[in-house]
Image 1 (spheres, one colour):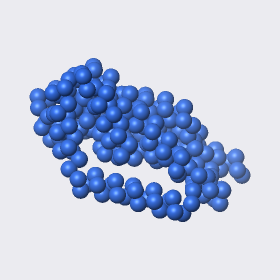
Image 2 (cartoon, rainbow, N blue to C red):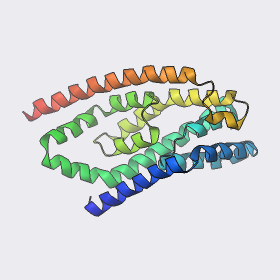
Image 3 (cartoon, rainbow, N blue to C red):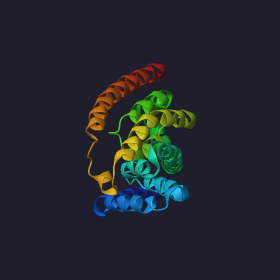
Image 4 (cartoon, helix red, strand yellow):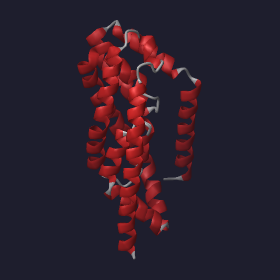
Length: 225
């Protein structure tokens, strides 16, 4: 990857990040959900497309995940969000691999330890991806791009992402189905048990990722030696 492309990519990510904090994205998402409720099942496709676009642009999708439950109920909301989130994960991964993987390979050629780390993540990619997907602390959108530049095989990334995202997605959609107005989607009410569960899963995921990554890296370094 050329230096110009790297600079452009960094600038775009920075602009998106600034826009997320500056623009009232949460209020827009709530307004969109409220608007979609008036159309019901007739606009499921529109909801799914907006969800995918938001996730690819690194806009936090939690409000839309809750909103799917609010608009369509727990079952149909899950059936909308699950394929939409998987589609967003695949698109973001493809963009990242296309734009950033070449730079990582070039960097690995100059550093044997960096190359070993890259291969270690690739070989333990399924386990690492599954663990970080289970934790709500790791940002969904950003994680898609980060994993795209590693050596992880797409098959492992896809399978682990689907399995890892499923519990949290269903939980958020179900919680959204319990709210009585769109305004409640952004205030965090009734989500305390999710925060506690998320904290426990984060501790477990962090410990598991550290152990798995260290073992994989040690095997790579021993192979080099």
